[in-house]
Length: 411
Image (tube, rainbow, N blue to C red; front, side, top):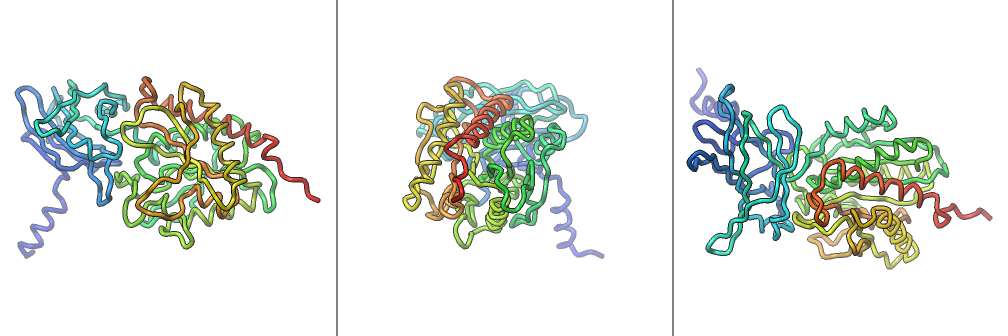
């Protein structure tokens, strides 16, 4: 006979995961990229209200949320009128202007789509909430801060580009997940083909950066052999991606703040080794890292460059790369002030990807920041992210052929 303690433990382990529930509706985060905290479900007349806050998942910052609202029992019918109330948006990184939030939702059996502007609720003590009301004619609804991007989306990219991108495992994450690198050519030792190393999702939930890189890689596939030699890591913080972490300044160490010597995360150790391997098989020109800024930023895409005092010529080249990207993006996508210094205060005063590119690799390092939802007055779709990526790819390919980047003549 099993002990009462073991029976109780078994009941806990086999229970249906749910953050909150009413007699007929539950909220779940055991879905891809799941994240929500302090969830409450309550009825308000004919409307079911779901209140929630993004979960920091043990880190100092929060922003990302992703959860499912569904019927407690299969065959329970449509959800009906649903009101989703985001509490404490001011505690999200850059969350001071929730009027510019445009989350995404997905009905059962359907694709993701943007939701409209929120209703803003001002509380008597000065706090603010954001709410969205939907009539849901399905039995479940997924709700996320922006369009998710994970392994499935990466698989679609590889399939859609007809095998142009080779996929290799270059190591594993601190959680034991494979770290995948895409390449359009392995190059050869002492090869002179112009080379680019691309990354995204070092901050795991910065999904808009992931979609822009997706567009970059699709455009390079169209160029074929005319493209530079490109190695890319689209899912840098894969543990955070799959766990639903926001991943900015997270513990034990922010991936993008761990690029010192020695590196402070195993993932960064793997990336550094791969970059050194890549640099021996091409003519390394630049590294580009695709990010997203604060939650409510909407002025446009912009670039951070590392202002290296040790190597001013390399820092100048990084500005030239960034300026070329800003020009290609044009006023439709680019912020009025596009190229900026990336040397701002951080919780960790250790090298970032751009610093590693310039200080150790002696090449340009640029971070591209893409808003989550709105650029100026345009609401961003996945297709618009990808179009921005295509323009960036065109700029990178052209700049790689620029006389500024020609290999010096050997004496």
